[in-house]
Every structure is written in structure tokens, then in C-alpha cells.
Length: 508
Ligand code: BES
Ligand code: ZN
Ligand code: ZN
Image (tube, rainbow, N blue to C red):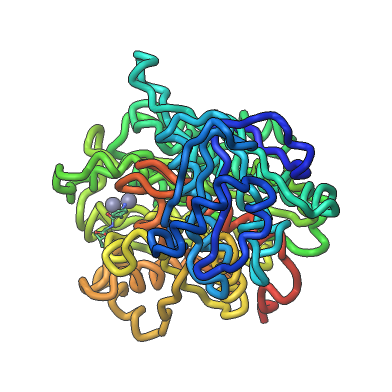
């Protein structure tokens, strides 16, 4: 998708569809009258007869050979001007792309200035248009053998036009950045939409290596033997039921910025979660190919931080396994000694994510990080609590939680905090060992995080993101088709781009 920014008078060539935004109750239609006087007349008539008010998502479109910009001009309602913000603009842009797609309008021109207000500057709007034009046109067509079955690719290009001359230079960096971010999200979607028979732990490690090579990152993959000699029995035990060997993918960026402190990102990479011996019901089980979303968010973010040239030392760790029932799977009741020496009774083999994350989290000690952030499709409970709109966030450092939450608001990947009070820790203590991998059945998202907390090195500030509900879309959405949505990449990128002493508390 090509997105460009032009001065209004320069865009002489006709396009397939010209789109203008309209806030509820807006008077004057000054610019519209100048740009498309004929259309503006029709709009005035429609408004006066209350056929069009400008409610959010409302559409007034008309087709006339005589129009200047395009034969079809479309006015999109944006709702109340004072309520317009980045989140609502994202939805509007998604809607625009949907409208262009259903009309198979390949070239779209948008009057950018009509989508701004005090809260959304033209710079921010142009970045959002750029980002969404990649995200909302994304399709996963890898396995569509017949071209005709593949969904329409429209629009193929979008021209943002403005009357603000100074914007031409000012908006450029934001648009370039938005494109880099969107491409990383798309990479994450592509990797995550691959089914488990293709995207095994081995393949995921290969993909990470490819990214590392392209983006000049360090990448190390710990395989079966290394994991054995390190005693990473959390990872090994979960993978016992798989015929594919496990991997701990470690990617490193910006070693030269070590002085400022290291941030570790950790992501759950279960390439498929059958539940193991504690097997899941078959209905909906195909969605468990997305149980690798956390790992993929980390891997894609690592490539992105290199593109963004962040001045920060970042280490990404992605334990990759398959939770299956072949080979010699772990059983309920098995007791394993984890990498950090603590023993865990496996009460339920479906609570596997915390086992693999635990080892990766304790391994972070090697990097002496100032903060650790993990992302994992960890609990069905989180999906039930927040649906697909909000990500659960829990952590040991309020500054870090706040920094991540702020970033989430900004990029439209919102997080809501749950408590990590000591009392919740009781239920993951075991009769036969130090810990057990399930709680008492209540507060499952919190007890899962309490379990992870046992594996955080020392007092390192740590935040856990439970992305079980947000990692994939069960149905088409304004910014993403059904399937993996790359959740976490934009959030991580935003947190890391704003990183500073105020992002976390110094560990005592
Ligand atoms: N991968 C699942 C969690 C999940 C559920 C992710 C739905 C996305 C959508 C995880 O491994 C799991 O099975 N968790 C169990 C834990 C339980 C056994 C304590 C769960 O949530 O049921
Ligand atoms: Zn599971
Ligand atoms: Zn899982």
C-alpha cells in the first residue's frame, strides 16, 4: 500500500474515490464548497433535511461525472468534534478502507485536514492514516490456491491531501515511522496466521534468525541439548509431548546502549496448545495455533526496534514449544525442577504457558535487566474478563505498569490492571513441591501471574501482559481481518520509544 501526502492544489489527476470527514453540526462547509461545489450543494440539502448529520460512521456519498476530484465523493461522519481522538480516528480510517475495499476503489484521495481537531494534529492523523492503510488492508492469502478466491486488495494507494503547506515536511517522519511499525505488525500477523503444522518451534527459530540477519541483530537459539544442560525443565517438560524439538530464541539489539540499562521482552511461544494430557475440548481448538502470539510479538518487535534505531539495549526471549500428546507427554502430578531451582507440581498440563515463561523469565537474570515485560496468551479467564478489547496487565512496579498502560492508550492497544496482592500467591503453593501450576480455580489471570512472579530475578521491575483475548480477532474488525492481529508489537514499540528513567522504578 502506497500512502502519499500532497498539497490540495497539486493533486490534479482524478482518483477513484474522494473522502472528506465531517463533524456533527459543522457549519460552513467552506473547504468542501471550494473543492467540490456541486457535491457541497447536495450535502447542504441532505443536512438541512436531516438526511445526514455526521454521526460517527455515517456516510453520504454521491456519484457524478462532473466532480473535480473523483467521480464519487464520500462524506464520512466523525461524530462530535470535541470527542474526536486518536482511537476514534483509527476506527474512521478503518471504515474508509472498508468502504474503498467494497467499491474496489484502487486509488483513494482523502482530505486530511477534515480529520483533525485539537486532540488529533495533522501530523498524528497522517501517521494514523499511514498505519491503518497497511493494517486494514492486510490479508493472509498464503493458502488461497485460486487467485479468484483471494479477497480484493483495494485500495492500493491512498493520497492524503492538505492545505497546510508546512505539513509536507512536518508529517514525513511520523509517516515513515508508522510504516515501519505497521510492517512489523504485518510480519507478526503473517507468522502467527501460519498453522502449527508449518510454524513449528524450529521454523519460528529460523524466522527469528532471518529477521536478525536482515536487521543486524544478535540471535541465539538454545536447542534441546542446551536446554537440557541448562536445566530448563519448564520448557522441556511441556515439549515432551511433541515430536519437534523446543527452542529458546534470544534476540539482542543495541548492546552499545547497555549503560542506560537493559530491557528484556519475553513472549510465550506455544506453537499449538492441545492442552496436553489435560486435553482441551475440540470446539475452537484450532485457535490454539495463536498460542504463540506473545513470542511472535517479541520477535517482530526486535526487528522493529532496529528499524526505529532506538537508543536502548533490548533483549527478546521467546521460548517455543508445542503442547501436544505424542511422544512421552508430561502428566498431571509430575514434579519438575525449574531453571531457577524451584520445584513445580504440574496439576494441569494445559497450564503450560507459565512453565515455559518461568524458565525464560529466570534466564533474564543473565542480562541484569532494569525491567522485564512479558506477553502471553496465558489464561482463558483473561479472555472471559476483558473480551477481545482489553489486555490484562499485572506487575510489580507501578511506574512500569503506568508506562505500558499509557503506551497502550496512545496506540490503541489498551491494557487494564489487575492486582498482584500477596494473598493470591497462596493458591499456587503446592503440598508436594514449592509450587503448582494452577490456582484454586478463581482469579485465574492473577494466580497465573503470581506463579510467574516466583521466577522474576530478584526485585527486577516486571510487567506481565495477558493477551489471551486480544491476540487474535474472531471476526473481521476495522483494523484487522479475522485471524492474528499482531497485538503487542505497537505497544512494545511505543513503550520502548518513550523509554526513560520515569518508565520504571530502580530495583532496590
Ligand atoms: N493457551 C491457553 C489460554 C488461552 C485460552 C489463550 C483461550 C487464548 C484463548 C492456556 O495455556 C491455558 O490453557 N490456560 C488454562 C489454564 C488453566 C488450566 C489453569 C485456562 O485458561 O483454561
Ligand atoms: Zn494451555
Ligand atoms: Zn497455552
